[in-house]
Length: 110
Image (cartoon, rainbow, N blue to C red; front, side, top):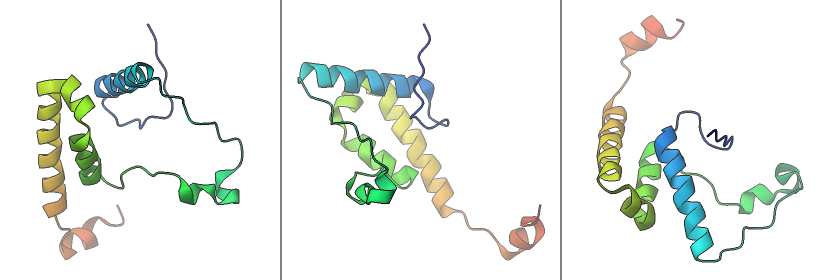
């Protein structure tokens, strides 16, 4: 089978992405949720974008959202917990790094 979903981030894990999409879709079906009305206008020209929900601005906030999503965490189980732990460590390492003056001067123009 071939599935194409263009709205996702290309750096997303394809297996976790597909699992999340399926879980969200099945949850919507089980709860008889109606999808929101489609937006046909230019959201930037109309200013509508200011009222729309936004994605988390960084990995840390995205992980916080994932941690609060009990449905997805229940479905992913141990794999989800391991992913969360790994990405928390990755964020911690990223957030603790600082670029030295030497690195900046040496590599900025490269």
